[in-house]
Structure formats: structure tokens, C-alpha cells
Image (tube, one colour):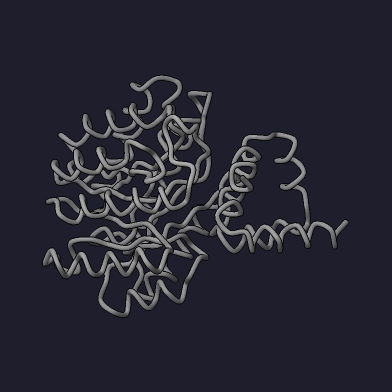
Length: 308
């Protein structure tokens, strides 16, 4: 229930104003967000690569309703990829980008988003790296998968995301695994109705397990996004059972969450990628992180009271 309340709060303009102006907020934001500029993103990427970690960068923002803004977000990604390449960070896909289709115009029309994503994919290819289309709320899922399928003819390494909280997750994993594509499997961080999503944590975990098995048994490249120790252990066991080489799949975790575990996995020879957001539009992202980790919420509320 608390998680659903917090996820609903991510769409509240009143709460956005309260939280973004609270002095206590900055310390929590800095724990999860690299900074506000492309230079900040490159700096953090450099630090993570030096520690043996892979990186995917997300320029924060979603639900763009203005075509000029969608073009500006696209240009930000193109410029970022150029900076990463100039720093030698993109070789072999070591640093890639994650793009929310609604940020580049999905709700303005799939043609606009497809054209902008194609431009980002071209910049990524020139830089020697890849693009993953991020998960978003339910209405964006099918058009996102359709865009990805269309663009893979020219950009076969274009990745996409499946959210285990959704009832369609296992079917999506099986379908995408059959095509041999890059698929990130995560639990999901959006509030969805019971008709399309599982409400109980146990059901989400079971759904994740089914999707995990489908991907690990398929010919594609699974990207397992989880901080759950049990699911990480299951992934390792499945890799051994299926005979997967360490470079044929990867683990993914969020920037600022379980950094010691991230380094431990990388030190075992596993591919461990850190999802690093940056930019000024961090409110919705922060609230979703608070919803996932009650300890952060308690710290945040205590800080707000002390500042008040």
C-alpha cells in the first residue's frame, strides 16, 4: 500500500514542488543521480569504468508533450554519446544509454519517437555502443516494443525492457528471447491496475523467475536488473546450468544501491552494469526509489522534519 501511495505521488505537482524545494532532498538526490549535466554523467561513468563496472546512462525526463523538447532530449543523448566516445568509454558497449520513448515524443506520435530513437541509435553505433529503450507506464509498452522491432532491422543491438510486475511479462520474455535480442528484465517501478499487473511482491518475484528462465534459455542477451540477493544467486545457478559464458549476459543495478555488491560481482568476472541517471528532472525518479526502499523514505521524512 505504501509503495502504491508513493508511486501515485510521483505524478503530483504539489508534492513535486514541496519535495524539490526541501533542503533535505539534495543529499538523497546525490545518492542516486550523477548530476545535472552531461559532464557529470561522463565523470561518474569514468569512475565506474575505473572500478571495472559497465554503465548505462539515462537523461531524466518523461512524458514530453512538446516536439521541440523531444528534439532537445534527442540532441542531449547525441552529444552525450559523442562525449563518452571521446573519452574512450564506449568501446565494446562499456558505456551505453537508456532512453525513455515518452521523453523523445512517444505520446506525440510513434513516428516522432521512432525518428528520434533512430537518430540516437545511429549516434550510438558511431560511438561503438548500444541503446536500450526503457520501461515506462503500461500505455507506452506496446508502442515501444513496436518501435524497437521496426528499428532492429537497422540496429539489431537495440535493447528493450520487460517489467516482471506485469502479467504479460513471461510472454514478452519468451517472444523477445526467440528473436535473440538484448532484454533487460526488472521488477518494475510504476503503479499499474490489478488487471495488468501483479499486486503481491511474491507474485512479482515468481513472474521475475519465469522471465529469467525464458531469457537464460534463449539465444539472446539477458540483462538481469535486480538488487535481490536471491534472484542474483538464481541467475548465477541458471548460467551454470545452461552453460552460459560470463560475457553472454549481465547483471544490472541502480547507481547508489548496493555498490559493494556491484563491485563483488564485477570482481568475479561477471558483467555488471550500473544504471546511472542524470539531469535536472529527477523528481519522479527519486520518488520511485523511495517507494522501493522504505529506509530511504524514513530518513527523508526525518530530514524534512528537522529542517522544518
